[in-house]
Length: 143
Image (cartoon, rainbow, N blue to C red; front, side, top):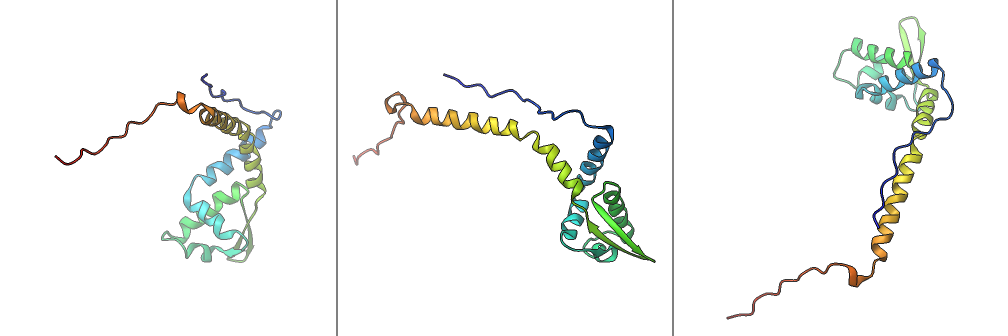
């Protein structure tokens, strides 16, 4: 008996607004860059100055500032300015919303793992006599 994997089924929890979709687009776009993901990691649990963030990278302060602005527009980073000094902190709200969106698809993966487990259990339960035997080569005895 051959088991076919379940087809991909997308789980929908009702219509989402255009604003929600636009925010998700900004979050995923911001997360697509490794420098921006690294900046978020550095901000986890810390509020840092832009100059402190920039010191970790081999790119200009201006380039780091541009990355930070992308993160600010996506709602992932908040900036508090005092004159020319800008302190950045992580805002995990949009990350949570993105995680909730991605979690909607976990049902698909769970079904795939359940199908795999059932297939492996079926193979393991097959009688040993029905399984093909491996041929073992015997060494030729001395001439």
